[in-house]
Length: 297
Image (tube, rainbow, N blue to C red; front, side):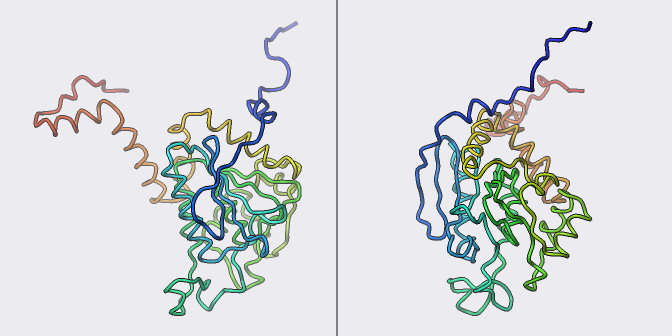
């Protein structure tokens, strides 16, 4: 009889983290529509408009952008969580009450001149290009523009009460960018067209079957599971994760994706002795000596 040392289920490094206490979140920043918190190398960004199912307006998106930039620049942060306040909504998209003729009307000088904004598109790109993993923690509705926000995150963890779907054609809107193309690459063209053409809603089990989310857990366990995933990510090489994220996005984002990957590769080269030899020679006003570096196969 054949013998093997492999026995039992595969090792899951998350198990040790699931039993640990939840982080003591520290609130930071001066925000109105969102909450920004950090703990243990995790940044948590919460859309805090539960009275409208966490629908966003232009100022919400400006604050989200500022928070993601804060997380990017924080050298202690290795992973970012995006979520919504309460248990009933991750985000229900743009607040239709303040939608103007050309976009959403905010509270800045541009809005006062009567011009609307679609600045959620900038936020989508920012999340994609953030060089740290971003996890969507989804409870309740992830609908419309909120559905696309979870889609552009690197990972999506859903509670068993989550609801997914698009409403664009129902309210005279659509997303021909990430909202359609990335959705099609995630769940398939036929299913993506169904989501958009019918404006149906789908439960968490259906989203998991389609590959739209990574896992589904009971609502009461959602934060603990999300934190466990974050803690495991924080044990891994941050540069390896950065390069992987850029690599995954490069093909889908065209030349902009290639540029991100190339920029990250440049950063790595700058950190090498070979890259620093060129800089040092210039500063020291001598010819660089690259002969000591191997011509790798």
